Image (cartoon, rainbow, N blue to C red; front, side, top):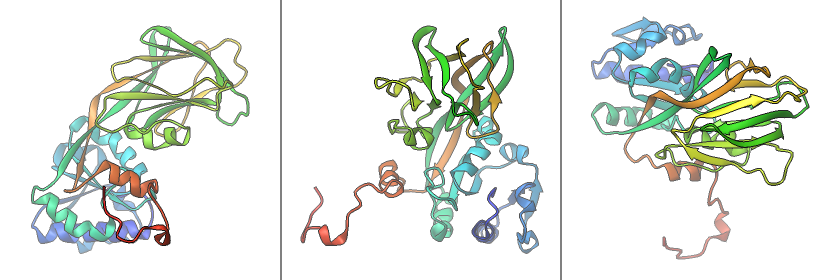
Length: 298
């Protein structure tokens, strides 16, 4: 699968296809990817074009070429099948697409020979209810975000966790993130980095009109409920993983909880979450002239 319309994506897809051809394996390309210009799929052998919704049923491994957004897009179609997903980074940060394009041939060879790490990532399910009836449902790998849309007014809303009152808040919104999403939008909002092995959900207020409001980390079994207060003056919106937003009215209830499905990420050998943080977030960056001669690792 390749989502972004970049020349580098096409180049990497060809390289992957050629390596799979050399190993005598069957290659499937989803119908959306097959429409990318200049893809020239006729140059690859043992290739079939299928609907994206079928990939999880017929494939042993799905390779996503693009950025982290491409993985989010793939999660919608693949999570319920538990098929492992390998990400090749053609985006910017690449927390989820951790294979460097320059190493794709070597890394793919290792993976196909059985040398890899599996990584289970849980998802969030959001429901908008009206009179106890579900009127909208969606899933998210990164986050569910309550926001004010195009308005410059703050949202007035109430938050409950497991049926208990937490607070009424005036703010630009609220980010509800998984550990996977803790290094995305929630990080920009001042939220903590949560190791992906933890089963936890993080709630990060967006510019709250108070000095005491801080991110909250709760158990993954928690049920989060948001209700728009009757005094609210703007039109709140809610979005899952950056998909088109849905209006949230005062008589609606927004419920967010852990989704029953998980996304299975596959990493080549040597994957290290902390190393990814160091390189993606520029931890420990220092100029060479400031390093000490003979400096040793502690």
